[in-house]
Image (cartoon, rainbow, N blue to C red; front, side, top):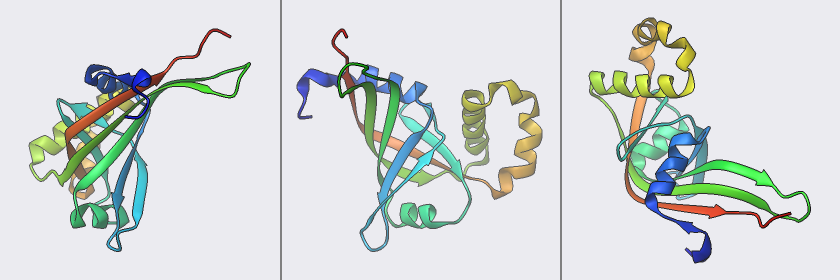
Length: 155
């Protein structure tokens, strides 16, 4: 990382992953062109889970090469008296793979729902029963994580 003064430890980066509203997944297509998409994610240990349809451009890219990069943004704040922004972010590199085990798929969906729609968990079992067969679950095994933060000087 070029700006060592903004570099944060891995523990901080994991905290950003855990509190971000969404993440951006980056990969390459079959022609080697970059492709990225935003996702709702949940984490368990060093795995990041997301759900999607069973087919589509993103799936084609991931099946071609599971090598991915993901970015996460935590808290941000625009300065009022200067042209800058306070932020915290994390970036990971990892290997994406489709989850085929039914129990792991359900657990991943539970993690996603607890994180993003906790007030609706009473309906979880019925929703899974109605959609599991047409829902793909992918996990990214993280092998590198970095964190970064910029703090504003007093304004």
